[in-house]
Image (cartoon, rainbow, N blue to C red; front, side, top):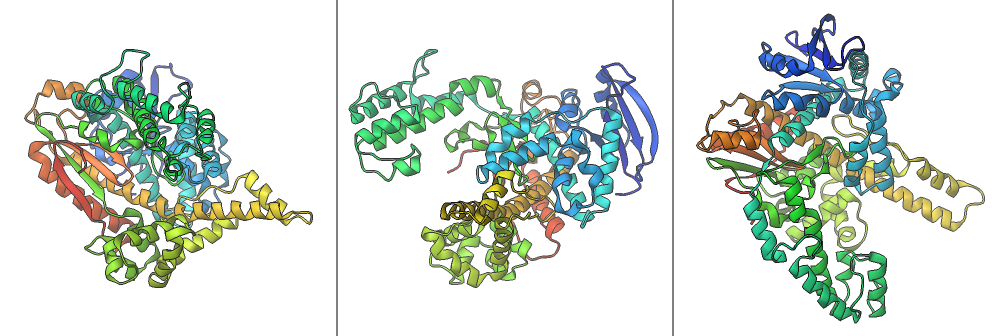
Length: 587
């Protein structure tokens, strides 16, 4: 924090009308300089016209609530502090153990507690917490409540084990909240014509309302014929399993992985049927009408929606964008997409976190898995990938179980970090990411299972359940530290890149139709290069053609700065697969 920083805490005030806002101006030391009341309708203009906007950090209860009107008015905010997201981090961080006042602020707990319970119950079904996070109760929006919570958070960070890293995490999380709102407002450029052509090629002509797509209908006939039952229900798992059992396919689920183990004429058409019905339900014509009808796909992102810090989505399914529909992600006329993927993000993060110079050396300037093979640790790239994923996710059987010991011998520091995290989790402990986000504590049900195994009257079944439960939690915490730190690196990359893109000049018409662009991307991004998509280790920037190379250089430089910001001078690189392209199709 520098003396140039100004904090402006935003909220409603009890003594004002419902359509007015109160703004408390604080200096760098959080001393109150004054309060102003603004009509809600005039606030976006006041933000846009404020002097030295980059020196102001807006403090508010919830970015999703406050930022939308500003974007709709054509303005953007340089920096913010999202109290709801920051509270969720600080209340559970093991580094803020003395922050009793913050933990006693129960009004701010809803989002964190709901997501934490969902994740602890689900363990590896981490993406499933999106609905819990999105449905969590609203944070308090009164300005005095926001001001009090802000002071509690600043005090908790100052008294923490590592205030520098926690400050960085809160800034990155808040920048992510701004980006989530901006990417929703700008949207991902989407070609309806390309999407419809893909659907027709795969599914046949668009069916009438209430009818079934032609190819889905034909496959259903084929599957029922193979089952010997013209009325078999194919969309109810219990009923389908009974039909499969009658023809000798004794599967316990209808997952693709299990069905593929069986050799029967029904399997191939059934798998195709399931794939096509998934496309229809997840990204078919109804999805196109609802989510991408006007040349933009506007998903609802949930920053911090997963307990590891990864983003989730509560609408539109941005995090499950199918490969076959990526050609529909298409730049406007006169614009282009700059797409960047990070190669092997999590293993590289593991090398940096653990300080494992040998693993970092295998990654330097090369594909990490090829580097492992070149050092004779395993025989093939596929084996290196299986072994590394097994080490990070705790696989103990099959090829992973066979190959992981070789990694332990070659990279003891890296493997020791995840093994230690697994031991802590299996024992009921909490682990923490590089910047200070901690895993949720075990649920009461988990502790009940463990207690039952230690009781004098415990059965072998009780002890077996406790061992399984402990192992599951150990696998969760093993991956938590790596996945969570990878999410932190990605947020730092995004925040730095967002700042650099804001500094680029507005390209005006950009070679296309300004009227069309303004309607599609909204007034804040009509002529400016902007981030329009983010998925864990991939970003897409929509940029005027004349700025494409500059944007590509900014993406690379931001990745380097994010690495240095988190890991200092540790010799690890994060190479990018970067391409300038009119669409986002993958080869």
